[in-house]
Image 1 (cartoon, rainbow, N blue to C red):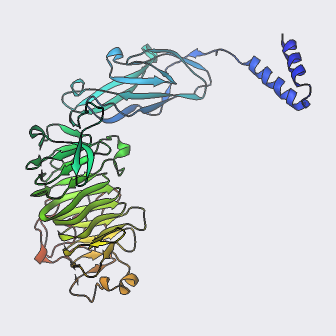
Image 2 (image 1 turned 60 degrees about the horizontal axis):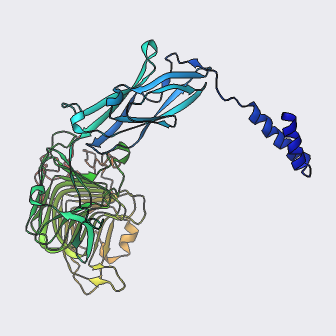
Image 3 (image 1 turned 180 degrees about the horizontal axis):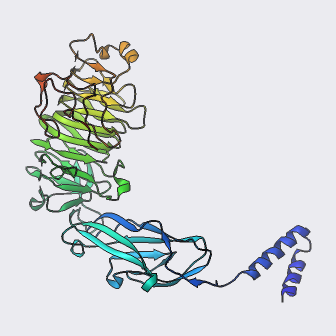
Length: 515
């Protein structure tokens, strides 16, 4: 038979060069020599695993997890067969797994899985679990992957923290589209909160899909300890004659148990510091009586967007905004009074007060370490960009006992159009700004312009504990210690610590660092 096959190839390729013929014959011999099965020995319980516990991070009740992987190694010199791989809870397990490309339903038993010598295989694990399935004391759902049985039994633990949640989302309309709500001159996918949804308690997490709108004449209230998770392209809108009340309070642990926290709904640890996972908290024209206290905003496109709201003040106290794709706070013709506010890491500016407005910031820390030489910690302007820039009065922009710092030479930007008010003042602030650049521009005369600058500290490192971990507290070695003016004193810092006199700059009273 082999002779006839070779003869066939010869007839088909007699016009080819000899080396091409030999190549084809080589392929034939290789194929014929392949084995259709392996001689294996039974596993002896000496498998090695990439980890002994798989933490599937935190999931919301009824929402599927991401997929996690386990690598299984055969470090022996023999090809082995693993008699069985299964979930400990069998058909009752809420975990699902794929073994070396073989998938199955929950609880499937994989039998006689071959693993060659010095080789490995992958197991992929995911889950969809209800809060009722978890342990009632710690909300953990657990199981294990079991390899073999009896004396050769080996186990890898599976652990998932399950959050019970209330899901808020736009309705699907009869034509298949989703509900929308108007914002300014456009509409966005979203819905108005009804009266039963306006109170966000700390009893369960809230997961928002689309934009949740606060109706006119209503107030959205967030209790201390409330947790709100926004899906991609989602946010919160406070519109005409509506109000926002965030009533967080001082926490005593690193878990920020009394802080109100807004963040994306991707709970895996890989997403802890990924910007742009959701959109923004949008305080729009006509919103009234907006008060924010002890709010942490993480990983948005714009943390707070406050537009055309110069007629009503937004009060921000003891709050933090981190890792925004564009801006931590973008205020356009707005009115803001802020104290003990910390903003870090934004693609364009930590704080942008543009197209005029009225602003007072006291004992605030603005830092930007975004990897972009055009980023700023603080930018102010009295116009908005367009084919013809439109101006609007910046009637007040006052910074008292603040820190304005970051990764690049100039972290303060002042953009002024003549013919319209541009009123700014920095009192007892630490500012990072290149001295040569300052000398060449009349807007940055830090040492000689007493109308706009008083007691400015230039280009001295405030020595934050850890910029990458968003720890902007300072210790006694900081150049910001005791450089503040008691005239602008906020008695307690962002952590509730009593400020000394003279006060330190920024949102934190200095204390020794604790890891």
